[in-house]
Length: 326
Image 1: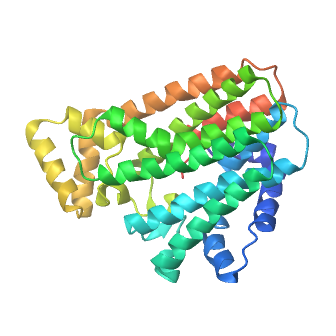
Image 2: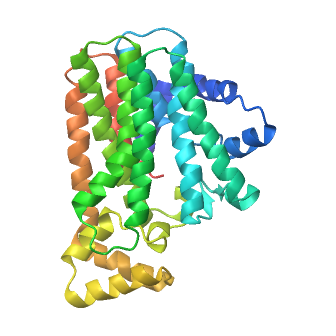
């Protein structure tokens, strides 16, 4: 994995530096407190995969204007806004290894800064003067909100189906990454079939990204992941590993797991028992299998383009998205 990450980093180092500079330049709050709160999360070591995909897809379609650097910040601002809001809703303690924003500045300020970032993203989208881009960015924002609301409604529901889960992650994660790829193509004036292919690529990457994220809650450690292990379960979030375990568990084990989910508190030994149940149910391998199918589909789409350094990087991102450690 370290080799894969290093290989990708070397390829995109200059692009990531450009994105980082654009984020600093285009945050543009009128109140310094907004910069402090937003910057606490934005500049805390995010991977920048979303804005990077936006930039790479535009480049793949022949776009060379420097405006793409500013435009790509839309994607990170939208993502950061949802994280700020999510941490308040979930009463989270850690994000990227740091105390969450609302534990420092309080929930009201944090929520309002999230709102500012949503508005800032829409403002930059409006600069394009392209109604389709503005519509897609608006739809992404709406979809992410609906995904989070659906997840909130379904918290603790041990009858949550795999189909329901897929709908939630498609809305809260998939649409943003799909939109990042699609708007890069639109900004470049790409033909409709090219736009559609890159949108499908983004869809598959988005699904991989969230499934991999949900797996990390049961396979990583707190220091590497940057947030408390088992946090999803304590928050009552039923992700695919848990859904599959509940489906395959025997009557007694299912009842025990349902009771643990309902009380949202458990010891390290109990969490260890959950992990054993997951492995017995083949949940980790099952989730990886689904994610690997999305990786294959994403790489198949990229292979339909003429070979280039950019297509190689986009294929590498597909592999990295699944195999990352945090």
